[in-house]
Image 1 (spheres, rainbow, N blue to C red):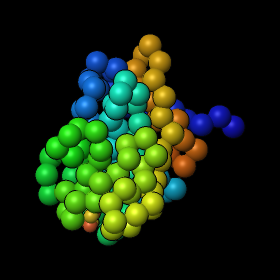
Image 2: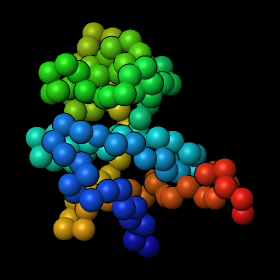
Image 3: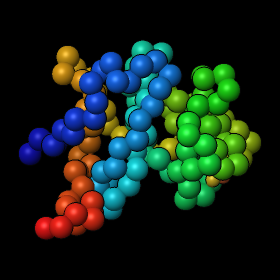
Length: 128
Ligand code: FES
């Protein structure tokens, strides 16, 4: 059975160096995912630091470091390679963010990952 693709955004809504968050069901659990563009390419990770169960943007509205070339957790400052998701800091060195399958086509940016489904109405806290 093919994966259920989830539309994230139009390509022009994800400019170079920008990011957005989306909420999905990941292996059945509601989680936050960060989707961003780096060097022209769209990438996505589960929004959960390898150090502690915190979102990368928990303390600041942003996921990049001052150079814009690395991801940075706003809690204690772990810096990640945006392409591999690996920590390049001494703290948790080499540990990786959880990658989420993503692709871009003329219609926009999509999550395409067998572990990811749309949130149910209950997970969205909406009436049935
Ligand atoms: S929780 Fe991310 S660096 Fe500590």
